[in-house]
Amino acid sequence: MLWIPTKPRSESAARSTYPSEASFIRSAMSIPANIVEGREQTSEKEFARFLRYSIASASELEYHLIVGRDMKAIPDKSFNSLLETLEQVRKMLHGLVGRLEPQLRK
Image (tube, rainbow, N blue to C red; front, side, top):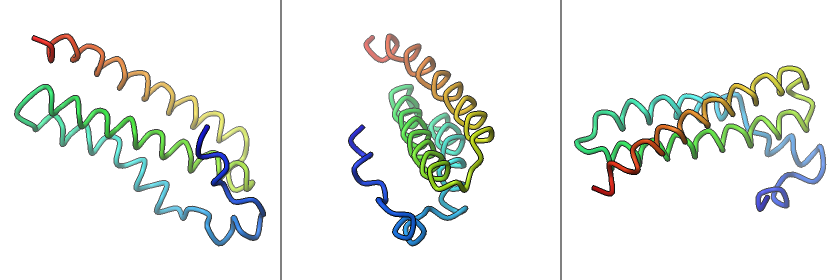
């Protein structure tokens, strides 16, 4: 993955750049917030665009989780559970976008 070289190389560097709890919350809350905001748009095309924003927020959250695990701030058991849930959410979002795509081509 492209972002891997940008991860902090040392633990001391990581502590100064480690995402705060607010970063986790912000990216996690962006997922449902974008779904709700997208549903209020006037077209299915716009809804699909906001669903893609939710998928991007899920990717951002995954990155924060990986860094947290690597820094030993998140126990492996918690990380695995959170990542599994995140993957389920991401699959549902991709599935919904996939269902909208044929409608957008009409």
